[in-house]
Image (cartoon, rainbow, N blue to C red; front, side, top):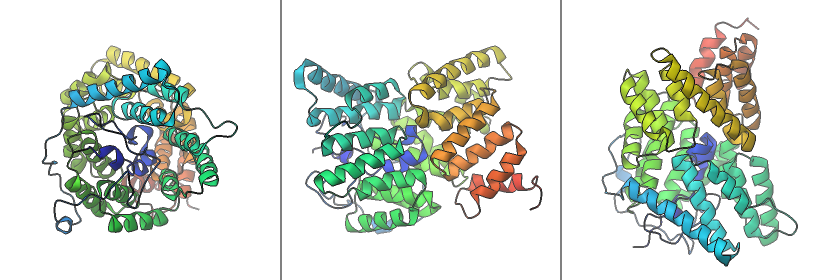
Length: 438
């Protein structure tokens, strides 16, 4: 059958941009080379010709709210084959354009999607540069397609206002609303989440598909509805019946992300991260997150081995950054080497794509990078860009690393109560005990 998983991943951008560039799922490439479907910014919540409704093959009502780490039961293409086909698609589409195919939208769009897919799963951040060479900022008299492509790319790089401006301009040109695409950015910025939830609930009820359930799960998790989010992700997997491993691994990773980083349950995240990297070896960010949990649980050798396995296969500095932390006491010379590797990587990324890497660079400089003042400055910049729970938590931690208790106390007050992040709640309570009464 024709693979629909590229279309399925269209809605998934609502979670990814909200978390971080590397957790955003740009529309990946079909392992069998099928025709691509809409990009991550072209979200649909109703039937369309390019994304027909998928009939559930299971009783979705039997999937109740709550955590369940049972792995996806169906076989998918091996990770090595999927990666090879992804690379092949990039080369093929790029070759077509180079040989005189021109910059037609029919070629630019799938090539952009494929480039962003490689950055997502394998940390090939030089693909951002290739994407920027392919898709230019809107110039005089852009088409709606030009604007949509720019919105997709600029959103991926956390240039959120640029993406919003492009979407508004595209709407003026073709009179087609882009409310769902805008909702991607609203979630990234932590804005209007109840309205986004209402839209996703309506979409999933009207059209129960992989994409509608993953879109719903993303906003449920952001609002602290953790059991409901887990169930929605599992409903998405229950519907999915293709052989490409990317969507399955991505869902496992997203489930692990919200359980560990929002719900404060890394014990629930560990088997999900493990399933993600088993399904898709080389999935860099999933490998990093799993390694961090393993190290915290005393499995340092396993964590180091995992990180080392991807170190030379990615342009992502984070594996080196985490290795530097893990080896700081046992092998300080090696730790210093990895810290230097990570520092060079983050310096380059901050020059090229600053907004997209503010948060991860701040994490590095607050720990293995040994520059907590710079970490705090980067975290503050990220917080100003998007005042989400994760951004507040990062900035509070950076302030503590920089021994700026006054700023940490101010952040605790500024963040306010009632936010769903359990780690943020715990950090606020801990810091508040050291703050002067007001």
